[in-house]
Image (tube, rainbow over all chains, first blue to last red; front, side, top):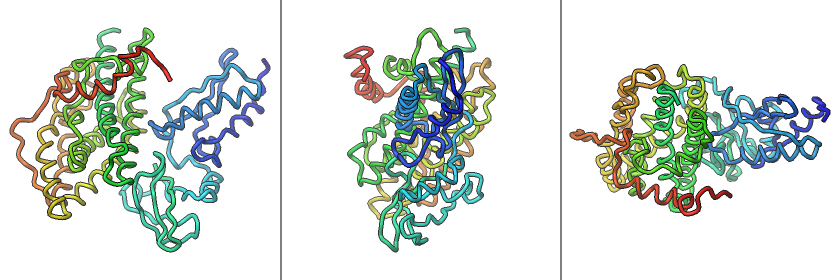
Length: 162
Length: 253
């Protein structure tokens, strides 16, 4: 089989996250390229959260997308290093998250406030109000916390800084 | 496996078993949490811990080779082969008991991972880097609840105090060396308990103080789990955890 690298890249970049379908694995920063070993294409993905059930789903979706594009012999390899952080989410990804109603991470993991554990203001993705408060540190999926807006009264998900 | 490989694998299993059993215990709260948000929080933490257990079991299986898989360890070993702390197998009790157990484990886990990040073993270092981010949130969560309940109403204070007193005997096992940890051959891989004990206890004391809780003296620290000597609770956990694989060996979804 002829391997068209540009084509493969294109196919892989369009695979989306099953929980947050507006984000591609490229936007999330978990797609780490692919390599060819003999006839096999090995796609490298870094897990977001160690226990994230979406990882298995993403592997299945990657294989499915590749098969549809005509590549049968595909393996998805989870690599542990570099460890994923929310800093790897692209600007495009952050924008899409907000549009989807999920507040994107408000800081980099290298920020002092993150390291000291002090709480940052998370603006409401619906009305942009800064008057919001945390409901729970743990939300509907491993990567999100639950917030509510004190102005528009809407609850919303916040993509936690990791 | 050669001698040093075998020891490394046993050490990895010791770390994996802690997070597996605590993850299983927290999973028992699913659908039973005091309020929806806490039900979700406890099961989220469970998911993080089982995720950590998986990558550690995968590593153990790779070291062992010969067709071993990550599933062999949680599903096919009997009580005496498990190397987890006695603390993590203790029953959920009331919410305060669960929080006390979690807080003690988090104090240990957080500082342990912080050291493990610098491990000369690249795989353990990568796993720790990932899990430390999660453990940071766990410690924050359990600390906040200890304070909220301890410095809360008269009843919440009394229950949180009862929980700390009931579980304190199990805290120190995390820092006492197991037989495996004393083997010189893996000395550079093992994170020595004495290296993190003071930091973990400082954090524990600081939070208890803020929570207006009294830390009772520990007369007889409970230990043995890391060497395979368990309380009666572990067998019951395994009977549930392993039932399907025992009844229908190698069944798959």
